Length: 385
Image 1 (cartoon, rainbow, N blue to C red):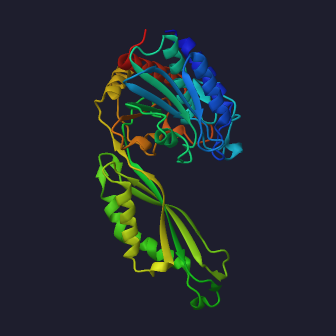
Image 2: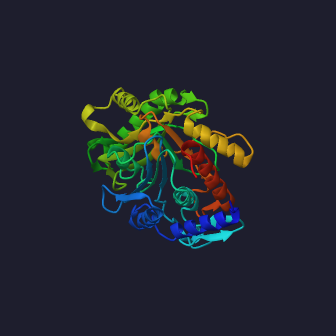
């Protein structure tokens, strides 16, 4: 295969994708999904654009039939531009410089999306898989940890993979294990009064401080002791809001917590553990509440499954070194399939350090490697002419 021509094709696709704004907020994925769907339909895929919520479109494109069912996925949404003055280039115009493509979403996750679009077209050009069904999905609502993208496709039965391969910034190594996550909101209530006479009121912020102290004292040490290899169980207070004026005793306070779980921990049990800690703190029952916001279990995949083995062999052949298994800091849309007993693999070009940052970039050479690695894996798993 002419690798220079491949590089030009990948850069051209990525340039098109960067030029289509798809930041969250507002999480509008209509135009970029229209672009992907048009390419896939032209290539010969049975292609649908699906949405449960207006403005959050998702593409599902299938070729072939039967098993194995290999599903590829990349999310189309990006974070926002942030402080524009920190960008050295137009974030919505791809710039190729010193072997890197710069632009918003270049690494997370439009670089992987470009690779997967090329891969889809190459598979079709070769006549499709000899056995099984290959499916390409491009979804929104990922940056929001929301339910309108891959979660919707799974719940509605639009995708039923035997193996799910997600685009991610892994420098073409693999992530097959991922922590679970849940978000919770704690609200405390009190009674407003003049700050000059605080005894006449009931300070909701002070109550929240007591609850957080109980969590820190009674729950945090237990969480910190839970370790599985490089993975750690963690908890973070990410947001706090309370009061409306300095000279008023606050009547309410809200905290939102991010809890990351080892694959062996379950979301429901971990949430009950948080609730039990709050109840034991001794605050009046009506003075606080805890609300579960969202959450999914983690997964710990096999290192020798059919898709992992095919990708590992392709990585070794292409890069000349054994494949490495990385530890995930964040969470992917693979988490919606955590309890389905399938292979879940994150792989793609770029480094996670470059994502969600001004002057985001992806190396062209890694995009080429990624395309050829994943093509070889499909040849192994499904057969191609």
